[in-house]
Image 1: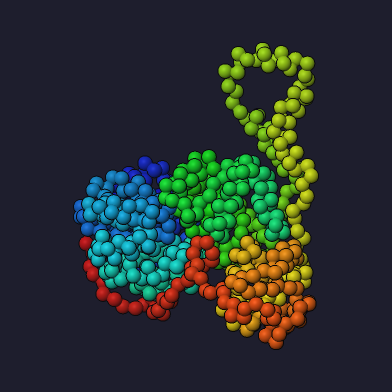
Image 2: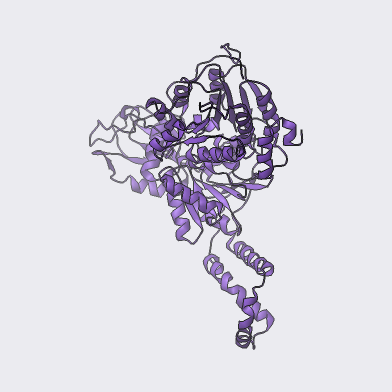
Length: 594
C-alpha cells in the first residue's frame, strides 16, 4: 500500500489528509489502519516515537464513530497534558470535514468545570490524562459507559509513571465489549501484563523490532568526571553551533538548575518540568517550536508532549533510571525521515548502563571525546564564515558604504576579514584558550560492567535497624550530598552499619561533609573502608566502635530513610498491585457493530 486512498479511508478524511500534505502512510499507519477499519478487534501496536501513531488510531476512530450522536464513543488515555493536547489538536485537524465532530481534552492544570461543560455539549471523543479522568468520573462529570473504542497511547510511559491503578479504575467504568487499542514504543513486561488484563485476543503489529531504537538516530557517549558534566554540556553545544536540542535530566531540580545555568551563560535555553504551570509550559513549548529556545532542558515525564520534527540532538545530561526510557528520549530526534544524534554524558560509574542500553535498542554506541577549546573555536569560526557567505545582502546598507569605506580605506582585505571575524572569534578564544581537557580514560573492562579498582569505598554507621535498605540509603546519600543517582553505587546494608562506593573525585566532598555531621540529633559518621565489596566485610580505616558498628555517642534510636513515594523528581513511581496473569485468549461477550 503506497497511498492513503489504498487504506480504505472515506472522502472526508482523505480531504483532510490532502490539506495536511500527507502523501505516504508510515509503516505503523499502513499496518494498523486497515485492520482497525475492517474489524472490531483489540490491537497491540509497537512503534517508535515519531512514527505517526496518532494517525494510526485517529483515522480509524474518526471513521467508525457516529458524529451525529452526542454520546461519547471513544476514549484516548495519554500520559501527559502536552501529549493530550497534541492528540486532541491532531484529531481536530484530521476530522475538520467531519461535520458535528467534537473532540474534548481533559487534563490537569485547567478548569475542571470548563472541561465538564465541553463534554456535556456532546463529545464523541475524549482525550484524557489518567489522573484528571479518574477525578471527573468520581464526580460524575463524565459518562464513558457506552464507549466503543478505547486507546492507551504511550502505554509503557503511563505504566512507568505509576498510572496502572488509575487506568484499571477508569476502564472498569467502560463496556467489556469495547475495542481496545494499545500503542507503545517499547514492550516491557508491564505493558504485556496490561494487554493480558484488558484485551481479548488482540492483533499484534510491530514496526521494526520490540524496544529497538530508530535507524535514523546515531548514539554517542562522552566520558567525563561527574563534576565536569555541565562543562561538557556547554562544549557539546558550542561544538554544534546550529544545535536544536532536548537535554534530559532525571529530576525537576536538576532540570531547572541546568536551564538557569545555560541561560546565565548566554544560551537560548528553557526548562520543561512538572512544577511549571500549564501557561508556563505552553509558553516554553511555543518558544521551542519557534526555535527561540535552542536547548530545551526537560524531565522524561514533561517531554512526552514534545512533537517537533527538527530536533537535531538529544543530550542525556543524566541517564534515565529505566533503560527503556532511553528509547523514548532518543525518539525525540531523527523524526519524519530526518537523521539525529543522541548524546550521553556519563561518568565512569554509569558506563555499565551503556552496555545495558545497547542490548535493549540493539544499536552500538560510539565513544567520542569532548572537543577541545581550540576545536570549538575553529568550528565556531567556520560556522560564522558560512553564515556570512550565505547571507542575502540588504541593500539598505548601500547608503552607508561610503562612510564604511572611508573608515577602512587603509585596511587591506585580509586584515579586514581578520577584524570582522575576530569580533565573534575573540569571545570563544578568550573563554577556551586555557580550557583543560574534560575527557576521562575509559578503564579497561568498564564496558562489560566492571568497575575501576580505583573506586572509593566508605563505611557509614547506619543500617537496617535504622530503617534503611540499599535503595533508600542510596537516595538518602544522593539527596544529602546533591549527587547524581549513579554517583553512589555498590551499596551494602548490614543491621547497624553499611558500605557504599563513589568515584575518587568525590572522596574529599563526602568526608568533609560528614565531619561532625548530625542528623536528627545523632552523629552520622562516614570513613574510608578497606572492605572490597564482599558484602559484610567490616574492615575500615580508623575509629573505635562498639560491636554493633555504631559510634559510642549520641542517640542510638536514629531512624531515617523511610521509603518515600516517588514521582517525577526521582525514579520510577511505585505501583501497588500488579496486573493479574490472564491469557490473551480469554473470553468476554462481544456486541455487534453498526
